[in-house]
Picture 1: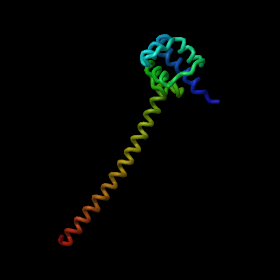
Picture 2: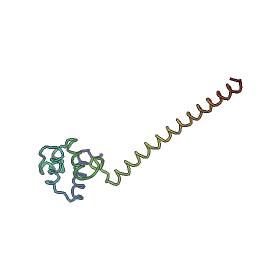
Picture 3: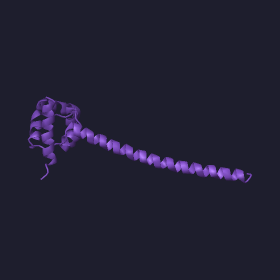
Picture 4: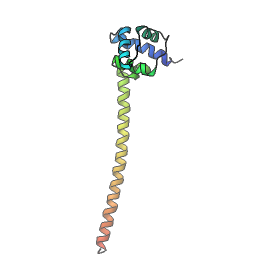
Length: 127
């Protein structure tokens, strides 16, 4: 059975917090500062132990406070894996844009040829 989002977030939050050498109290302080509300260290403990749900705003603030993309905390992927996924999506987007631009360029070329042919025809007819 796949891990729930709550479980993934709890696990990844703890992993990233420990990797960043940030205490639960310090993370709570950083989140509080970003959100303008009071979040105490015990709330982080409860989130990491899956005893408390988290709000989207808290998840975003936690990611910012830890300096990682939100995807790292909710996907279960490492920052490197998340960045590679992000780059792959960007590459695919640019490839699609390039293909669309190439198609538009071919249409413009065909239109220019048709215009030149019409100009040549008019000039050949003595116009």
